[in-house]
Image (cartoon, rainbow, N blue to C red; front, side, top):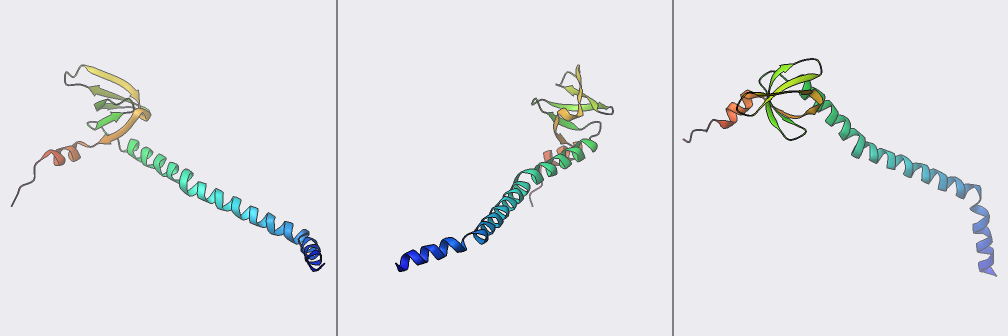
Length: 121
């Protein structure tokens, strides 16, 4: 009989108060989930987009670029949203393309300093 009274008391106290505790806990978990998604998914994408726009705004004539299709070339002309890239060593393959097709940029100064051997002392 004592256990029946305990069960009755537990069920009567878990009415509105129990539902509020469960709802608050659920809301907290949803907030934590969205916070996790923001810091793990959305924020890195925004950071990468900012880096790409900065890279494309610093694009200059003479820069070596890697296109999204995997070709390396040298920028010979820049318009608003298009560039003309020269591919190959024969200097006859010039292709206009959108700036968005550039995946990576290497400045000529960085390439020259990387290719010079360092002296050993």
